[in-house]
Image 1 (cartoon, rainbow over the protein chains, first blue to last red):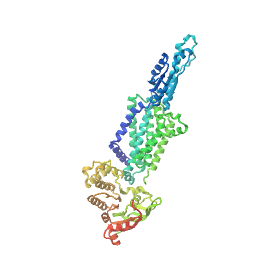
Image 2: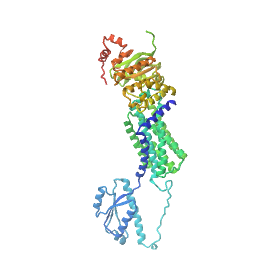
Image 3: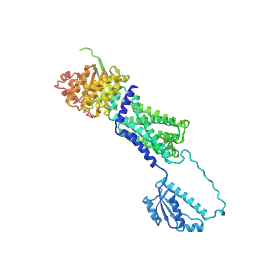
Image 4: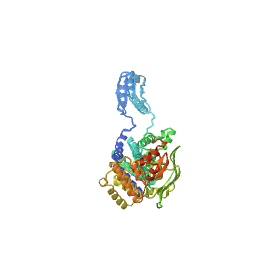
Length: 373
Length: 249
């Protein structure tokens, strides 16, 4: 025990003495937490629409105004021909084309119906499908408005209509940020703890000081605990800063669920991820190798964690990989506890899996950290 | 000659890396309080042999007892009773002189009081008073090596292993370094040292010459010179090392 205290003292001195470490540990996550949730947004706004209006009538004017007023679209230009519009799309200066035919208004009045043509630039699949759908919605509502205006209501029996009444739970204003901030909090804690711990541990190999430790009576578990505990504490500090300072004061997010539960899970999660960092460092010899190896794991773990895209809609094989990523579980737990107020009884699987990861990574790291090199 | 206590007893120690025999069946004894020189060309297997004795590397075969403990079964006791100074400087450069002393004192189980006494004594003898609060990285190489040696014997080990401790150090500091070594032997610490400086070889009580992973000669410098009818240790070294088959790394 005494040996661990001496090792801890040394680690803290080294961490706080390193000029790069502290800014990296504190400033980086806070800045990222301020920037990323505002930028990473799947709501499509500013879809650039190019309108080719051959009709130039009252009705076509009204339609274009309605589209512009929806807030999703920006009308970029009014070229005179479809070819001209298409060259804008080709030059990536437009996302979709709406072509209104010459006899749009007169056909509407005379024959009671007309058609328009939509061409969507599908290079960005999400943008294309959402943009197309928004535009269709606007067109539908426009046509029913037209119908109501043209026909006196009394002439027809009222149209059968199902009214929808929606009540939004857990994130009542449907803010994308409310959904993303807990996720980013997890992400930042993960990156800080795992990277820093791995880098810090492998530094001993790089500068040879591990030799001096290895000929001493220091035991494997003591050395590993000495590396783990400081970053365990720092991880909690970073998470708290993010939760109580940024999430609360900047985004106005107050955890609905139990803080105790959230922190208990955080501690467990940190043990697992720090173990992963140490495990990687036992296989590497330089900080550069740690960076690259870690980058590989982080890319997969993060992109497949359900942080950005729901894991339920992944193909089966990808879903199975996502289930092997510790980040998946904490992202879910953070959202469940912070937004929904889930309690212990909802988290059995998450706790079980994370305990498994913690045990796996750490025992593997201890075994692989060979004193006899 | 009086009976001497054996502190290192090596029998048939071998280390293979694949088909390559880095250390090939070596046997020798080292007695308490002597300075045992371990000589050989680069790549002769000195460091590998030393690392096995320190418990940093597992032998492929053979037996060895260090400080009375078996290197296979009692490696923790071995570690408690030896000091080691590696070829590459391996104290913490981002800690101060004092912090390094405190850390290693603590690791070897010295009490706070002992650490305090030892460190002030050490800093005084090494003339490090002014830099005791400076980072080790800022010290000149010679000072670093003296500090590394002092820390290696901080816990009064039975044996201290020194792997080329004076490589790249100026002649004056080298002389001071050897004074420290003599002082250690006067406190009955056994010194096991590898070196490429033949003048340093002359300071040793006994010398073993390694060629291609084997020990080709083992005796006092005096006897070795007589045996090979050489005028200096330089000559002895050249005669033996010239027969080497291995290319130096």
